[in-house]
Image (cartoon, rainbow over all chains, first blue to last red; front, side, top):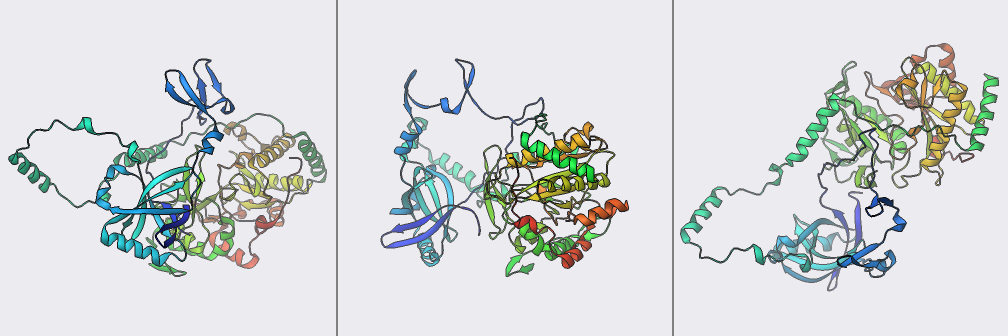
Length: 260
Length: 297
């Protein structure tokens, strides 16, 4: 067994069906912290607060509201949401192949690897190789965890990867960010080209370490060396255990003491 | 580069001394775990491993690693667990010799695992009594408490098994192997037991965590019965001055050690551990199969 698969099913198009498993391609290197109470270092939890009543609200008293205007909401229950959720799919149905370069990277959301399942190895290799030679990506829709995704399937170093794509309505319009069109001078173009040429390198992501993560880890290491970690107190209630259990233990204890 | 069961694993820094006082090297550590693998693997299997790594030996800095290192070989079994804060985390499962060797190549001298298997994280397969001597108390006091505890539990028709922690204390475990037992159950049970012992032997036992309460007493750490806690696995090395092992004892041995008054002999070091295993097999075998129910819970 290798990496944990998060979905398994079949890639299909035309008469081709390739059994595959989906596994994660990235693990965020974020250093995560718990929030503690400074008083005694007890871990804190999040609860919902009603500012009007200045009271905590229990989960059963919470409902989703879709805001349609100031102080106007349409409420939706879990059941209603579930009734419109797509059925979990068992296939990644490729509907078309497009040129890889036509998919702007702004559409890329989250990458996964596809791993061939038993019996699918040959077809998998074939598809990966042909995609590599033709520089194509397969576009498909599929459902995972109650959400429908638009995905691109492409070659990555001889294997297949699946990248979830943003739907086009999620992409914000860029009309406003473009400066007004003004003629570009050839001289300036040449100068810019030269600068870029001088700074050109091979893409080598390993050279760009996550400096913040590194320095946080160094800090933690240093601190751990200098001072013992803090621990929250145990809930030291002197509350007795179940009455019958305590009685049985006391009875057994009396016997033990007599025999020792 | 070593080939283990057909998989390539490059072992590094084999000559590095990890226990300076005895000259025990990383090669020795790997050899120890290879020899005890038939006995330790059933106890590690399917449990989320916490690595406790000593890259520069027991006298130097160590670190805990709960997340399975992302540079792991593809054949290392892993699973996703949910942490206290709700975030998922990938952890290593030591299910075979190859993985054990890989983990030891990372100088993870101590192997710590939860009382529950990763596929049923809320259901412990044993209840543990972690006997921890406070300042001024010693292993002899732990022995006394362990023997009383055995008899106390026997009165409730529960069998239990002792092992050394490999450090200062003793661990007494009662196998349950019941699907429905929860950590709430084992915590409630072990806490009641600790309180009854404390009430009856106030000079010997405390059930309270606070350091000042523990002076000259044995602290029964019932709070170890928790899904977020890990315990050192039976047959794991400990990173003390010498390569001691968390090793199972027979009750007879404990009685003998208590009456002979030389309780320090209780520590089992790596070579003796291997010899004892060859002679007597896995004294903790019952932990894997014996089904018992906690009464009155």
